[in-house]
Length: 113
Length: 113
Image (cartoon, rainbow over all chains, first blue to last red; front, side, top):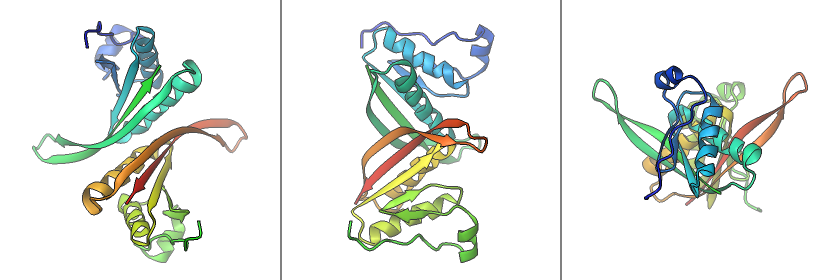
């Protein structure tokens, strides 16, 4: 897409954003990490307000529930006209430190404005 | 539906099934709890083998990722012809012990054979 890339939110101090795996934003995708849930909610809202027609919320492993939380909070509390376009689940293969392969579930929730 | 209800699986001893929140099965629905992931995988496979055309895997809160794990393990490792019919996410209201209301995210993954 030729759209201007939307930068991640700056809810906390820059140092905190650098330290923690923050809400990365590329191609209208928010990757859920270990920051507070509202950081990701704000990242989604910011992308929509910046003109993105769709925002994809992605997470892997045990934090999949946080992706669901983000989608639910966005559409029920902040942007009532946002709807769920689709939800995909998949299995990704990760190479661990010792070189062994492990599988992890992933979710991709696509929201539309 | 007029189908014969499919009972929950018996992977472990009966006492263990009584003690832990097990895979409850009603109306072709598997509710994810705190048991080992393979208990729920086996519960889904058992329902399909018992003739259920669809099985719904449900979870709430932080164990939502386990529902995704169950669906992924069933369709990639045990029943390769099982597909995802649909995934719904929602917000449920729970009353805590002190009477206050809290909200929790939920997922419902519908698998078809």
